[in-house]
Image (cartoon, rainbow, N blue to C red; front, side):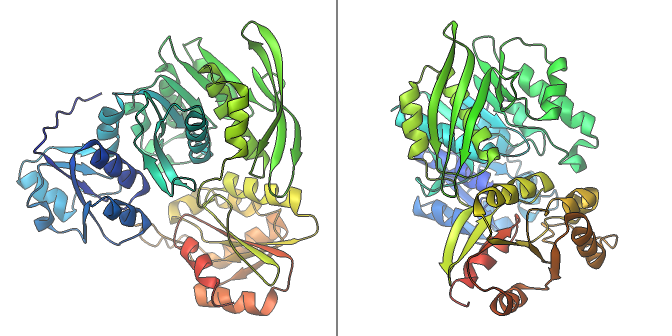
Length: 465
C-alpha cells in the first residue's frame, strides 16, 4: 500500500466525484476534517449528498477547477485526456486512484472487505447493519445507497469498517484486509483482465492477502469459487452457502413476498456443531439469503451474539436499486433494480417468480455497455426465462462508442427464442410509457433493470401512467 501524507492545508480534488464510490470516500474524508472539493459531468444524488456536507462540486471538467487543488483523486473512469488530469500533470500535482486513497483512509481501522461479481453491495450493507446493532459504530463505505442511512457512506467512531471492494479494475488488491467475504466469481470485466484466468488469479491473490489472525468467508455454491479454493495458500478460510459441504450451511429456507426465513447449521462453532434457527430477512430470493449467510458467518466469527444478528436482519431496510419498490399504481407494483449482468438478471427474476404466484412479470431491460452485451449475448438471451415480457431498451453506452456488431433486432429475437418470452423493442422512455399504458392491466409486476438511466425512467412513470 502506498502511504499518502496529507497535511491540514491540502485541498483534495476528486475528479468524477459523482460516482458512488468516489462520493462515499469524499464524504468520509470531509467528515474526518480534510478539505474536499470535486467535479463531474452531471449532477446526481451522490453529488447532492456531497453538497449537503458543504463539499464544493464543479459541474463540468475544466482546468480552472484545480486552481486551489493540491492533491488529485481520480475515478478509474477518468481518461488521460481529461482536461483536469492534463492540468494536474502540468501543475505537478500528485494524482491517486480512488483505491489508493481509500486504502490509506481505512488503514486506521480494522477492515471487513467484501468483494465478488455479484451481491457485494447488499452484503456490505448487511454487515454494516449488524455491526451497528452490536453498537460497534462502524465506518461504512458501500457501492449503493443504504436506505437506513440515506447515503452510501458513514464515518463511525468504532474500530471496524466494512467496505465494498471493486474487482472491476483490480483495485480491490490495494485494500488492507482483516476479514473478508467473496460472494462469487463470474465472467465479467474481461476488457480489463483480458482473460477469465487472469480474473481468477486476482481473486486468489485477494484471498491469500488474509492475515493469519483474520478470516475470509467463501460462498462455495459458486462453482468458480469452489474451483479456485485449490489454488489458495492460506488455511484460515471458512465456507458458507446452501451446499452440504459448507462450514456454515443454509437450511429450511422459506420464501415470502416481503421476507424470507432460514436456519444456519455450523459444523464447528466454539468446538461443536450448532444449529441457529429462524433468521428473518426482509428481502426475497435465494441470492439474498446467500448474501445474508456471508454476513452472518463473519459476524459470528467477530463474536457477535446470534440474537443481535437476528435483530439486525429483521430491521434491515435494504439498499436502493436492489429490488426497490418505486410505486404501486392500478394494483401493479413497479420496482427498480441494478441488475445488468445475466447472472443478476436471472437471480432477480427467479426470486420474484418464486413468490409472485400467478402475477405476470414484465422486465424493462436497459443493456449496459456494448462490450458486455456482445461478450455475453447468449447468456443474456437465456436470463429472462422467469419473465413473461421483456421490454428491450437501447444500450446505455457508459462512455463506449457504438459497436456496429450489435444488432438490436437479432438480440431481441435471441431473447424471445432462448428465454421463451415476449420481447418488445422501444427507443426511449416515451415508448415505454405508451406500451405500459396500453398493455398493462392489474396485479402485474414491472421491474426496471440496468445500470444506466433506467432507474430514473422508472421513477418518471409514477406521475404519467
